[in-house]
Image (cartoon, rainbow, N blue to C red; front, side, top):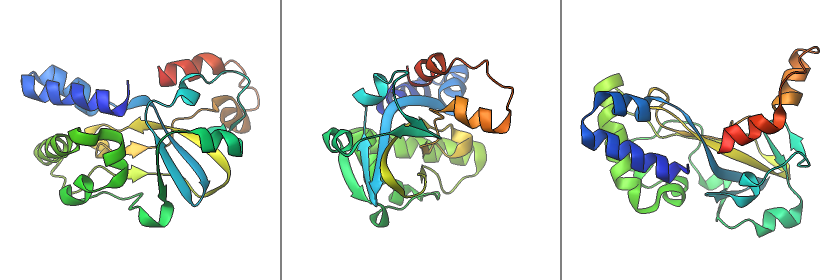
Length: 192
C-alpha cells in the first residue's frame, strides 16, 4: 500500500471510532512502495515506484537502498526538490506539515485531513505538538533509491527512508556467520 492508501485507511479507522482499528492503523509502521531517490543535492519523491516494486536479485544494493544509473534516476517520475529547500529530520508543527512539499507530493488532497488527524490523535495520546517529520539520509554522490516507511503515531507519523533493502550486507557486517536471510523474500515482504 502507498502512503496515501495507508492514510486513507487511518482516516477510515478514526472515523469508525473502533479503538482496535484505530490502534492497528495509527500505531504501526508500514513499508510502502513509495520511494525517495537521491542524486547529489537533488531529491525526487516517487509514489508507487515501479522500479522499487519490480526490484529483483540483480539489483545493486548498497546499505539502505538501491544504486541507480544516471539514466534510471532521470527516468523516475516524481516531484524533484533541492535538499536545502526542505525541512527534514525534525518534527513539524501542524502548519509546517500542511505546507511541506514532500507531504504534498505523497498525499495530495488528503494532506489537510491527515494533518488534522495526526495532530489531534497525537495530542490526545502523546501530548505531541510536533509530528510528521520527513527523515532522509545523507547526501548521496551516486544516484540511490530508498523505500519510504510511514511511521506510527508514537513516532510522529513521519516518513522515513530507512526501509532496509540490503539486509544481507548490513547483517553480514555485524554477524559474519549470519547467512540464513532470504534477501529476495525480505524485499518482497518489505514493499508489498
